[in-house]
Image 1 (cartoon, helix red, strand yellow):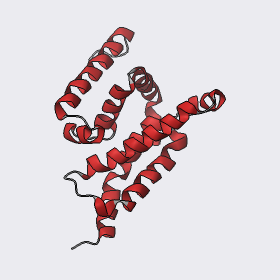
Image 2: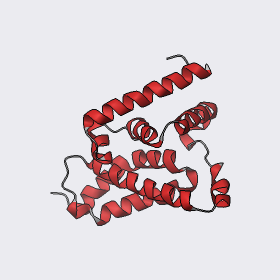
Image 3: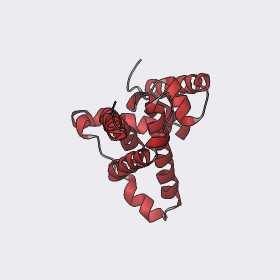
Image 4: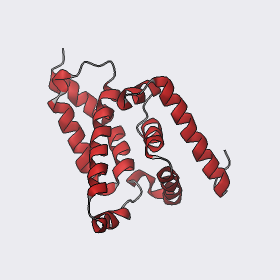
Length: 167
């Protein structure tokens, strides 16, 4: 039988990249390392209380909460601080070869309402299933499916209208 430390280490290895990718998309390069570290620190501290059927939903609920807290703090920051951090987003290291695509995608996602952007990022950047997204956001699976479909249709409409891509 594994110790809690061994179990957590396995989860860390399995989920670190996915959590980082989600956090990175939400908060940018400047804060992604710190927020991801906070996520796993909080998860470790409360790991003894974890009883859920899905570690993915549990860890991403923590990640979503940390991201939301940071974004809320940023929105209350003085305007000059927000201006200074607005242009700091750079493509993730594994996407350097696709900078233009990343910038187009980033712009499209930023145009979505926050809830829809969160759904898309949890589904495609964090690679969560609908049921896990529902647990993260405290919604029903059906509501998540419908809202995600609407977000994807909105992205499709934006892409078609801008002439970037035809899906």
